[in-house]
Image (cartoon, rainbow, N blue to C red; front, side, top):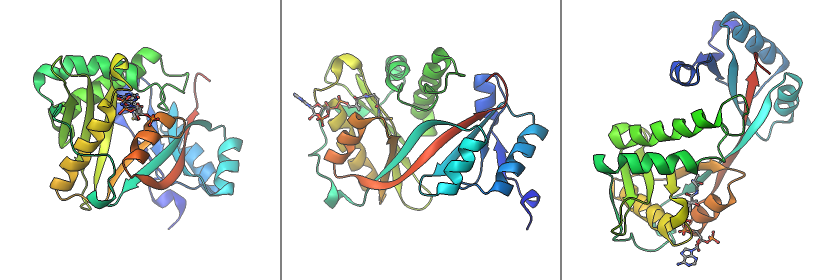
Length: 246
Ligand SMILES: CC(C)(COP(=O)(O)OP(=O)(O)OC[C@H]1O[C@@H](n2cnc3c(N)ncnc32)[C@H](O)[C@@H]1OP(=O)(O)O)[C@@H](O)C(=O)NCCC(=O)NCCS
């Protein structure tokens, strides 16, 4: 099979519509000189403005080629894994965690707008900060409306002050999606209570292992998951390559 016989990139209609530019993602996680040239050609033919590329961090050729071809490093993607409830070390689920309801959505969107500034979108100056914040507001709203298999909130009686979402994967594994705690409620155990509840929900649903993705720059979130027994599974590098406006 030659490189041009297969789709080397995928156009992303949702992202493109949301940010108002044409966005695609490279399918492979490693580059060769030939593939990098093919990708440039594909993006030119498809009038792509921004290409996402998730690179394996342990391939020196890929990193050198990414730099040569103008890819901008925007995030270190860290995947952590918990193999079973037996590995979990964060205590029992808190009575202050419950399922999200439609009444919580506006409060959760407000928390989400302020919670994800460590993400790759905020680290790419081509995207406006307002739009990046809105991305996470839309994401938690969709999660509460069925995109996630469970959306849980922390509420000690004064309303929803944090969220965590759970996903059941096709391979019997499970994953934690979005996590966020209102800034004035952080450092009081809400994040820990949410992680315990999410692990409990996923284990009850039969999911193993449980994974969660966070940013290499987000030491606070890493500590939260590590204190619950999660260990590193993989590390990858997110690059964005802009063909316009750079
Ligand atoms: C990461 C995040 C969810 C943690 O939430 P949190 O509610 O602050 O978490 P906790 O209160 O359970 O734990 C935070 C720290 O407070 C400490 N803590 C918890 N309860 C405490 C208490 N009663 N007194 C003193 N310290 C306490 C914990 O030991 C922990 O310390 P550590 O960071 O040294 O491990 C929160 O910082 C956040 O929303 N960040 C932005 C969103 C984000 O990064 N999401 C994850 C990646 S998508």
